[in-house]
Length: 395
Image 1 (cartoon, rainbow, N blue to C red):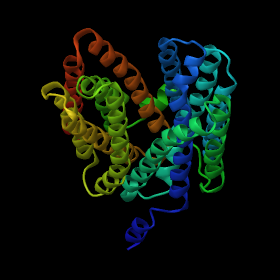
Image 2 (cartoon, rainbow, N blue to C red):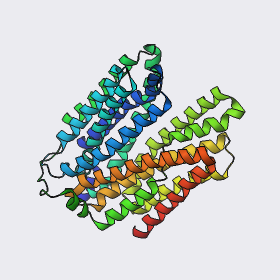
Image 3 (cartoon, one colour):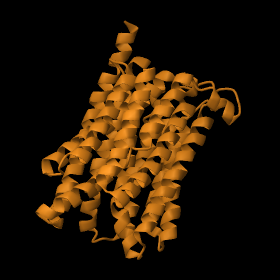
């Protein structure tokens, strides 16, 4: 009966606080992300600068996640690290507006992403500690849904601010402080954390080896999948290229943006659905299903003529697959590892994902440029299937 009660109470103050913090923080940096390319263009910076800025920031964030997870498990209270990470992200994002050159944008964005890396494994460990093992799926699904709502609201807010402020980029970046600092305040005052006994001091390598064998096998599958898991913004480019000969560039760009909004709406909705399902079935099988949906998406690009309806199905599968994969992955990670190792586990998982995200988009982009979309996305499909097979062998 106690388990029943705790299952009904999974949507508690801490879960809601973390969800709202994720929404506000994503809202903040998605505003910045939406206007960043245009801001760099006003400086005369080439497209290569944008790629360098994003790649450097993502790489820094990945290693910050690993270090943060390692140290968080050794502290009696993890929340101050998360609060500091949210504050650093908010200040770094807002300071982009003070930049007068691309190298200053690089410094500000890297600072913001350093904060993002520091807070991520800690936030996930706090979320796992706030619920029972029977409700991990719903808790992580709720957090993913709220984060994705921020990704929907952010670009829309950016469009409104561009019109209202007449492309005054400094003021737009400054306004990102409002949702950014709201996220830090929510983490500080809405999230509750029980004082815990930190784990004994040990070397990083020993802590890494101490993670369970089943979790390390999960990392192998995640890494395999991640090497093909391209950024879904590439789907926007795919849609624009496919639709332009039929509808013209302006209509094609509008349609591609609309399809990406559909992608994110489904991502948000199916995060909660995937979370509920994850609490009722084997999480490894659910994650393998997410990999299968991603493979189906990639194979559609390879095998089907890319008309509007085919593209719509590709974006639908993309949104659903991300929701299933991210929710199942986080809840499966929490389930496989003891509570005392959650920081290290989430940090390691995030680092593997970060390296995969960086490498996959570079590889898929290079293959697309050299050999065409079918070869690039066929490469992704093969790795998605391989990752799914590795999962099913251990699930």
